[in-house]
Image (cartoon, rainbow, N blue to C red):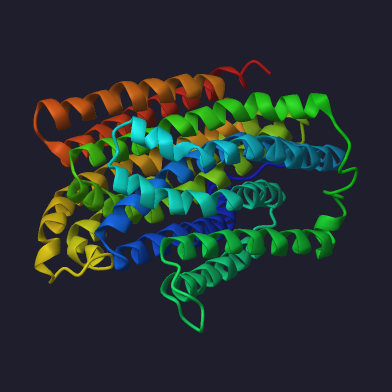
Length: 466
C-alpha cells in the first residue's frame, strides 16, 4: 500500500492532469480551428455566406457533439479497466465502440440530408437555407470519420497515449486550412467552389486524421499489446450495453448544452441577419477558447476513472483512492476556471481585434455587426469562466460513470433556466442578442453549481460505503 504526503500527491496530480490536458486541449483547439478557419473564410465570401454557413456548421456541431457524447462513454470505461489492469476488456470496449460509431453515423447522415426543409419550416430565410444546403450536402460525408476519430482518440487518451493526437490533429487542421483556400477560392488551377469547397476540404481532413490515427495504433508498440482491433467482428452485447447505458445520458446532456447554443443561434436568426452574424463571430471565438477546459475535462474523466478503477481493484486503500479522486476533480475545476478568467480578460480588452479576424472593421457596411458583437463579447466572456468550472465538474462525474442524474440536471439548467431566461430577456425585455447570451450565462452558472453539488454528494456517500 502506497502512502504519499498531501503535498507530494497534489504536485503529482497536477503534473498528471497537465500531462493529459495539454495534448488533449491542444488537439481540441486544433480541431476547433477547423471550424474557426471555415467561419473566417465564410466571412471572406460575404455576410450571407457567413450567416448561412455558420448556421449550418452550428447544426452539424450539435449533431456531432451529441453523437460524440455517446461514444465518449468508452473513455471512463477504458480508464477504469486500465486502472484495474484488465487488458482484455480494453480491447472489447474498443471494438464495440467502433460498431457503435457505425450504428450512429448512418442514421445521422440521413438526417443531415433532410435538414434544409426543416430549417424552412422553422422560419429561416429561404436564401440562407439554400446556401446552407450546399454545406450540408458535402459535410455529411465527414460525419463517420469525425465520430470514429473521436472514439479512437478517447481510447488512446485513456491509455495515457496523448501526444500523437495533437500531431495528427495539427496535420489535419493545416490540410483543412490549405484545402479551404485552394478549393474555396480556386487556387492552383482548381475551380472556385466557394462554400462547397470549404466543406470538401473539411471532409477530406477528417478522413486524413482517422487514417493517420489508425496507422499509429497499428504500429505503436505500447498500444499493440492491447490488440485494440482484434476480433473486430465479435459482438459483445453486455459491453455494448454498458457503453450505451453510460453514453446515451452523456450524449443527451451535451445535446442539452450545445442544443441551447444551437437554439440560441436559431433565435438570433429570427432577430435579423446582422445579429446572427455578430453572434456567430462571438460564438466561434468562444468555442475555440472553450476547447482548453474541455480538454481538461477529458483528462479529469480519465484521472477520476483511473482512481475509481484503483479503488475497485483495491490497488490502494479505499481512503487513499477517494482522496486522490477528489483531488483530481477539484484541481481540474480550478485549472478550468482559472484559464477562463485569463481568457475573459483578454476578450474584454481585445474584442475589436478579434472581430477584425472575421470582418473588415474599417468597412462602414460592417459597423452594425461590430456594434452588436462587442456587448455580446462582454457577456460571453464572463459566462465562460463558469463554463470552465462546469465542464470540468461534468468530466469528474463521467469519470464516476454518473451520467443519468447529470443529464436531468443539464436539462433543467440549460433549457429551463438558460433558454427560458434568455428568451424573456431577448423578446420580452428587448435585449435582443445580448439577452440571449445572458440566458446562456444563467444556464451555465446553474449547471456549474448543481454539478459540483452532485460530485460532492457522490464522493461523500458512494465511496464511504465501500
